[in-house]
Image (cartoon, rainbow, N blue to C red; front, side, top):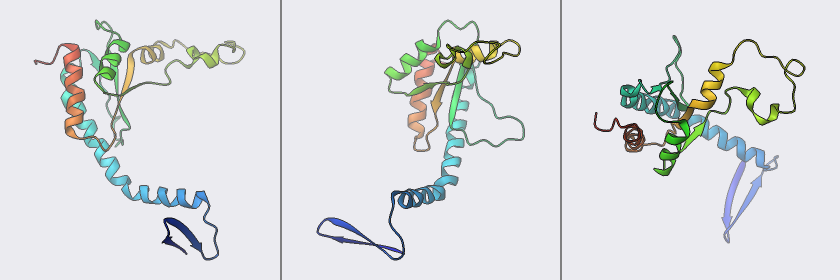
Length: 173
């Protein structure tokens, strides 16, 4: 059992049969966060639905994420992938969004054989490629994430979708 006594602006830790190591405090923080998990999950789902609903008219420009059948995901982010033939590049829209204070992230994976860590490795010796990797190349080139942080308000999400629509020329539709 641990008690906290505040005296002369110092926090003294008094323990009975335990030493208050950092991991004890981190575990306590983790347990407190676990109590919030159901609310986080629900808010992420709501944020996803808001984004999806507000961007569904742009499906001719973007591949929008969808849950697989019989799944109930807690969405960490909203992955947008540019469709073939659009008149802009991922870096164009990402730069525009970042300038409008909307954080984005590139999809880390994609075709891992194109990542710098693979440069010293030899195909056929250190790794093998089964088939074409055109889909992995596509998502590496054309996909980016928008966050679904549970602390986002509808106004923040609306700002994101308004800026995407403005960039693509769909703002007036």
